[in-house]
Image: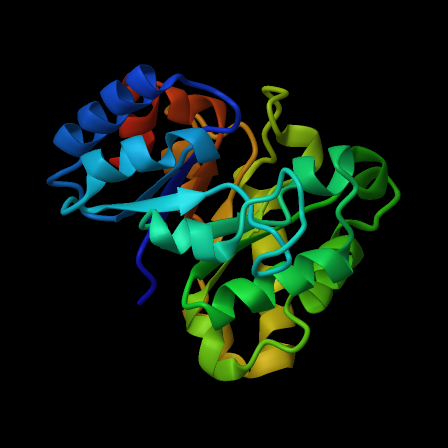
Length: 249
C-alpha cells in the first residue's frame, strides 16, 4: 500500500517572515493529517522554515542542489550545506530547471546519485512539453527522463526516490491534465520502473502529479490508481489552498 505524499514547492516566493507564518499555519492545520507532507522553500528560507517544522509531520525539502559536493561553484548550494540545515528531501529535474536553466538528463542524474549517496530522499521530476504531447511523444519523453535520471541508481536506493510527473504545459498555466490522462502517464512510468527494477519496485514507488493542482481537482486526481500524491506549486503558497489539497480525503 502506497502512502499519499503531498509536497509544496514554494519556488522563488516569500520573505523569511512570510515563510515562517505559512509554515506555522501549515504545521498547525496538518498536525492531524493522514498523509505524508513536505514543503520546499527557497534556499534563503530553509533555516527559518526548518525551525518551524522541526518535530512536526512536515518534511523539509529543497528545490535543487548542486551536482558537486563542494568547491569553486559560485552561486550553487551543496548537499552538505542542505544536510547541515536539516533538509531531508531534494527536488531535482523540475521542468523549470530543465527548460529555463537548461539542465540536461546527465546533469540531473549526477545530482540524483549524489543526493542519494548522502542519504537524501529525491523527488525526480519528469514531464513533456506541449509540442511533445501533441506529437504523440509524451510517453517516450517521460520514459527517457526516468531512465536517464535513474541511471546508476541501485535498487536498494530506489526506496528513497519519488517520481513527480509534471506535464510542462500544465505548470502554472491553469491547465491540468485530466485525471485519466495523468493516470495513464503514471501507469506508463510505473511500467518503466518495472522494466528497470522489477514489478515489486514498480508497485511500491510513489508517483506524484504536478501541474496546476488545486483544491477543486485534488480528490479526482488522487482517486486514480497510479497517482500517489501531488507536487503543488502556486496553490502551496497559501494555507487556504494547500491544506484542502493536503487533506483531500
